[in-house]
Image (cartoon, rainbow, N blue to C red; front, top):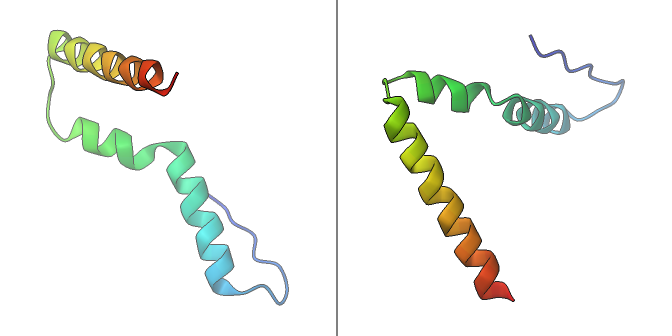
Length: 63
């Protein structure tokens, strides 16, 4: 459970922004979306390899 202490005189929008940032860092939403449907391990590995190849190509293009 996330606890965001709101300081005296702090704007509620600022506290909400801190909450959202902390929530994204935990990866809860990403995990929830991943569990929505089953992906076979081979499919998961194939997607992982595709992402790695894509990011490597981007890094190579930057040089």
